[in-house]
View 1: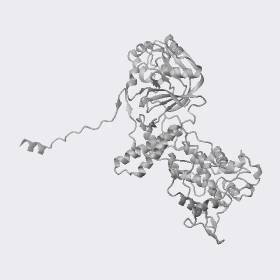
View 2: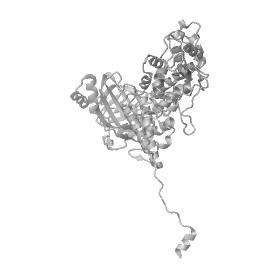
View 3: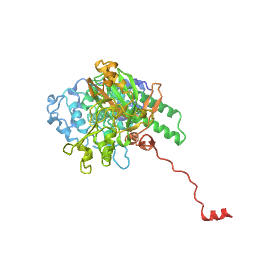
Length: 585
């Protein structure tokens, strides 16, 4: 269609348009001889459709369809002039009563969930029914409101374009069956206002669903893993309805709810190209088909992750920091261009780096390490119960309040180390190195330098306790501080060389994003697939597509080497007693 230059058009667009009007609405055309006859797809030329479809009515108070819509939504019509854009509790009471009941004739109040995995229900994020019901009641309850999709007697021209987008939802990584609208069951004569009203309400609900799904409302990733702390930001249903009402091309308005990030568009382009290739050459063997299915699933789940990202990754700034865990790289993007690109070390599978977005507020030079409880319990306490060599090795200091500061005189079988303060002052053995980039968050995760830079030479750098270690943090600090307050590189180096703790607070906070994009499109247009270190791909593929079996699952990193399941060694079976007897003869 004209809205998209993708070549992804239904094979039977003409027959779809004809059947929509003839089969669903029962449109009656005037024959050349003056007689009326039902519309027949085989007898009516396509050019006549444009003139047969209706435009929006001009007089809302005379429109019996809007009255039928209000009646089906339970909106009181005794005094329509009192209905405003902000409905009162009384006006919404009938709509709220529909929340726990069926909102449409023949439509269940609960929709089916996403595919199940291991017998457990998978989460599904959607527009809250209560909010949707209230938005519909408020929208159609306005005194001057017209229907969006139908006129007094027929469907609007723009409705066909929207329904085409519903049929082509897979061109944007969605499923067309999620937006299927069954035939309304119109009579062969002109449809009644009640039938048009039911169709109008169903179209509005489907448009709200499309907008929510385009924004990532199918799955709430926060319910798939406790390390996923980024979810969909669903559009307000009333805002969607208003946008559609004010749009000359509502189909284009619905498409605008898809992510506008360059990587989403590149992944979508690859998805369309892969579909074109699969249509031309069908995979004959199971191995090729499985490989193609897995790659398509990779594209879809990573497109879905882009739906959860902020529309503007830079926020109200001109710069942002972006660390991608599967890629094990960090970028600084300024004015749309990557100005810093380096290796990072991320968390072990047992101590994963969480996925979330926040804002960097300050940078610490020669920082002090305040050891978190998880490391106190797992690493320091076992050493204290022996001889406590870890304290002298890393120059740690401890303060347990009433129990004192001398760890050798504390009974560690009785004292809770989580109530003690354990720090490592700045120095040559500081595990944080010389720089720490703070973006306060509930995960106690930040970016920092490291005491062991040699680990950046490894390919699979899943080694930390959850924080992100950055190679060449000096350059990272120079770029961020130069952009924020015009600080020179020479000044940054002098602060590092001076020693001692020094904090530089940013004038304007800088957005920070820690993501899990396992597939991306490179500058040359080729695809780059990265390891699924934490198993997020498998879980999301199962919840979203029901195809978790295509993915291997998490790759576990114990220390500096990845541990994979070893294949059992092939051994020859032991000879039987009779084989031994015959062998000796």
